[in-house]
Length: 317
Length: 321
Image (tube, rainbow over the protein chains, first blue to last red):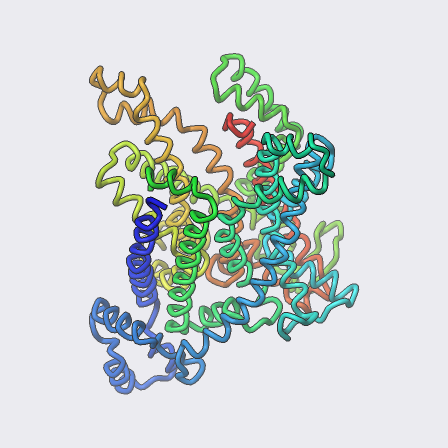
């Protein structure tokens, strides 16, 4: 196990540094916007005196660096600010329930992505040389190319307006018809990535000696593929879970707005439209934190699954 | 027209290949792939329409005809009209101009200038320069791209619009909504350089120790000469592959930002605006062509970019073959 602990420590040391950088960039950018949160909240007809008083109370007349220091202090104490759209309710109360909705949707989409992508990739690799391999790969590449903001309306048109199979919009939890269209639309772009990587790794594994041995001793083809090929080809897939999560999140912005799902994507859309700065800032921060942590967990998990990675990475960071 | 253009390109490439330059060889190999040629032809037609939109488009993108709104295809309007009676074909052509401007500007600034120069610097200089550049890159890589782009576009744009010189430049260039373009490609290239710079850096790290570079240095070649004469030509393959792979993503992100309401604004035509207007369930029910027409063009374009990127990867990186 030599080398793994320093590696984990080095990765973990970066987390707070990156978070500070991310929050500082997000904070200064948000404060650069037109007006400040208070003048936005007070609307068009505002009393300059009240504006100045409230601004002073909230500390918005201080230099940006001081404001940032206060913001970080508050965040460390679990206070992400408050949303004027919800009459001053704390941001954390608003975004965490919505994150839970998005997380459920994302999880279902992730399961579909890997559930379809893995067999598709293995099949494409086994059929290498026939017409099915390039056909499947190009079809999947096409699905990866179509943005979610096109797939969702097209699916709405076909499955809701023409065939009447599913309801148009809403959110009723993960065991309901409402989830079918958004989950499918979200997983389509990712399936291609999973299938292509799976195909490549399967092709590599198929050349290995132990596969030839397994075939030579007369094992049925299904056993060879499922026991010997698939198991070994699956390992590198761990690395693209992180990328899949990013794809899912970016797609969720559009799917949630179009399908009326009360998740963080829709919340971001609404808060950007109405310049609810504290919510935008809180979302950016929480999402960044979630991704950084997820990526590091995946990286560390991978070093346990495949010890070769440790040695490769200890040289070049 | 597509075939004619492809044919012209083919003859060009054959003469190039006759000199047996590595890039010429690669291009010839690329043109032997039918799918790649098709994708290239589509992209060429798209960029031609975009660049020459004022000439190609039958109408202006703002010309309204309120007596003929939501029309289906007809001789006067081959792709119908939208809610204000604007010609959809003309709007698609003008929207491709937006995509062309944004992709080219982002490719040159973020994809080429920033990523190549920073990747070269980090790889060749090493030490503190390398650490500084790569750690900044780490931060950008960790930032959730789309939310940050939305934040930047939502907050910084009003500040940019206020600038007087932007207004002057806009009058001089006669491009509507210049501030929109500047903010969007600025923000995109801010995030676009990291991936390319990382790959180039790691290649340079290996190339730096090769014999011909050591020999060049031993003969007293200046740093600039080593970088531009010896290192840059040897990473050009990777640069091309990286650029072609990122173009589809850049085009898609611009459309996504505009759809979100923080990119290009109506009446400046963009696919994002058209898809947003055509994507609401009411419009979808009555006039699906308002979504399907721009949707098909966008899907075809990004598909073509991805196909070309795949083909270029096959052709230019020997290991993949």
